[in-house]
Image (cartoon, rainbow, N blue to C red):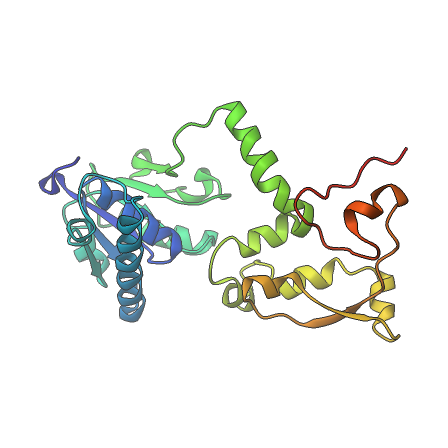
Length: 266
């Protein structure tokens, strides 16, 4: 466990990823400053972290040797970027996945840090050469994620028993959309996120759209199960199942249930 005297870790951005990083560093005993530009955002983030840590401790899943209260005492909020970086040994950028915004943040940090602090980005798809171009402290920059090392067999397991099951029903784009909170607001700001409604409507066939004008069976988008906003659309009747799978699927039934994989056609 790190000693709090060793230095401060700064998290730039208090969204889902920023909060998660803050909890991870606190679990290792580091003092953490959670920086954002809005007081309410920081306040909400700290409250969310408190609830998450309390839940993790009660369920026996809290990381580190410190209890929830001790870890919480290591995390504080900050609204001034210059105050935030004082004494910092590591800065983890966690702002939205927008190249110009991230470049602006790193340019600002580049002017106020010393030659020792590490500048790290949580980007998932932007190139380091784009993010850090022209910075005086470019040799101190990197992209980092808390993933550890995964074996080929474990990666196959994640895909086959995890994502693969999900992709069979909602696909990778809708999975991406449902993977974190804030999807509706992010989509409305034009960040590139797909709204659940858009993802569902986008995969409707021409026949389905035509059926909206006919006497078809009303169905609700899959978003209903997640508690997200949905739009009632209309879809044609499901075709009768293959005779070899009727007993498994049920006549006219179109929803999957465990153990009900259709058999290959002969």
